[in-house]
Length: 338
Image 1: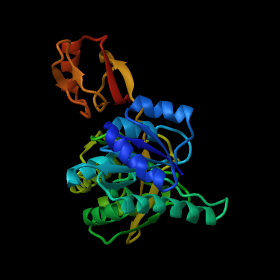
Image 2: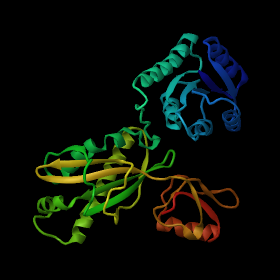
Image 3: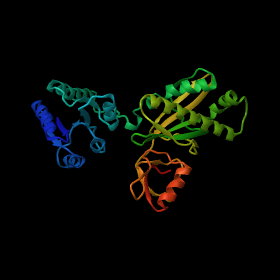
Image 4: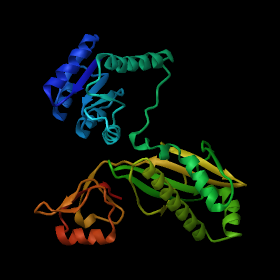
């Protein structure tokens, strides 16, 4: 196996290189993000990487490469809860101490090879689906269960959930953006009603026929409540989420490429879905800033004084303040430009 060792201190690179070479692996050692990119271009593609006290830029350089997943191990000098959480948030797959014994390092690498052999034994048509890092929060993975409990309490009935894998056409729907502030990862949470589900929902919630505008308002309210619930659960996991404003979904179908659920109970059915948003940063002029945009980089004035920190969700007041202090032509980097 070819392994990349990333360490800023030469003695640490040499220590891990010696152990890994002794186990029969080929090893390349690098220290910076630039050296990682050069190694990936010039040398063989590594199957694994060991990051001694990983930094976000170096792990990001590995994660930005197309192709088979490169298994990343973070070797930490301090195994505190904060450091471990930070390393996983950067995108490493496993954690060990930077002072790990040769036997422990051998065990970690052997585990990678066992996984590869197991996957290979399943045949050419088998592949492991790599989860999107933006969906790794438990509350996002368990959204169906969370919303069944929340909506059941709102309506006053017992509700359960299952996958929505048939007709995904909605008659009434709303979506709300969520952003994980630690890395500006973005998802969209949607709530909707299919045509056959409108009457039971309407009768239960409103007691009879109502205008479509009232149903649309209810969809937005349920989306807003769902987002607030996810935000609370994310906080329990140590993550901070920001919420945008719920908006009507104009397209009749749920976008493909995400997860979707049916929340059902006592004849009521509510559809929910979660889609990863493209969070590629965009540079826009201050005159193009709008409420609900999320800053991907801090905004500072000419003197370097911080005006608005990265991850902030812009409000109308903040937009006016930035226009006044920066001028309309100053470029600002946003994670969401719409």
